[in-house]
Amino acid sequence: MTANWEKTGTNNGVLTFSIPQEEIQKGLTKTFNKVKKDLNIPGFRKGKVSRTVFDRMYGEEALYEDTLNDLLPNNYEAAVQEAGIDPVSQPQIDVDSMEKGEDWVIKAEVTVKPEVKLGQYKELKVEKQDREVTDQDVEDRLQNQREQQAEMVIKEDEPAANGDTVVIDFEGFVDGEAFEGGQAENHSLELGSNSFIPGFEEQLVGAKAGDNLDVTVTFPEDYQAEDLAGKEAVFKVTVHEVKEKELPELDDELAKDLDDEVETLDELREKYRTEIKDSKEKSAKDAVEESAIQQAVDNAEIVELPDVMIQDEIKRAKDEFLNNLKQQGISPEMYYQITGSSEEDLDKQFEGEADTRVKTNLVIEAIVDAENFQATEEEISSEVTNLAESYNMPETQVRSVLTEDMLEHDINMKKAVDLVTSTAVEE
Image: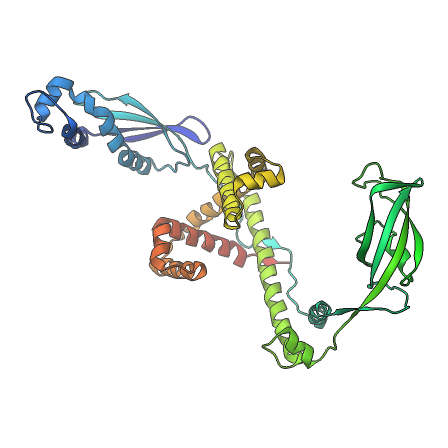
């Protein structure tokens, strides 16, 4: 085979290749043996006509289309390998020549992976990450868990304080007129939560159960209801109850209630310290990786991203999103109805970051090539084992879903990311 690659654009070109006559003849024979089974020709039993008779009656050209369809995939792949190109889309095939007795000449319009010129991708400087676990971190975690165990206790004839919850009725008025959506009964409001209009909660501090009071506030200029934005309002409020949090004692009993694997408060503190340390280490690693990879991408040069790669990435992200919804029992039609959106809206949602993800993958693949990373059989076997354990499926099923090339590609990509991350310098 002779293959010739001629660029017609930044990432486009025409691949011309030939299918040799020897292979064509074998292909014609194979095609003939398939079609003759269904031939009914006078003077011959069904399926018993000879090739000579068939060629005389119909011409061997009648076999060309099916033969080409059979021979094309392997010959195209061989031409791609010989030309040393990396297509990213299905080729547009055009038959240049199919003369009898001669090699067939095929032209394929192809979009190829763009060239990546790597910049610096090792020893990149990234912001120093905080990995230190302080006593305050541990106490904050402990206090948070303690507050989740708190009970709400009614305060009898005591004023409300920040952090307390009041149960209230209220009705709002603007210029003496009640407005829509400004009323509620037996509404629980935690003072200091900033969940109401600015200034509202502060005016309830000091109120007691049974109090009736007017609360005057001004709606923010950017308030969602435009007819109320920037206007002063008076809320007539009735306080039914004032409740405060009653926290459990910070002792060994609380520790056992929070975690049945510990016996004492000190054991729980040490466990929280370990968990916080692991969490900070992971967050720091993720932050370093994100920063370093982004710098490696920024330092690389890609003249132009093929649109087909961006569209493929949009489709991949959309399909992954919809599959996740499907696992939750939500069909695409249901999602579009609930959100009031369409498939086009979803495409636009993923379009924004598609080019960034495509460029990032291209740069990481270029690093794989530059470092000549090659996954070993041991690494592939280990990856299969890990995936099988993660998804609770047999290893044979993993190998049936993921080809050797796919597994090798993923392992090599991880190696490239690890290289960029591990050599990054925190400053």
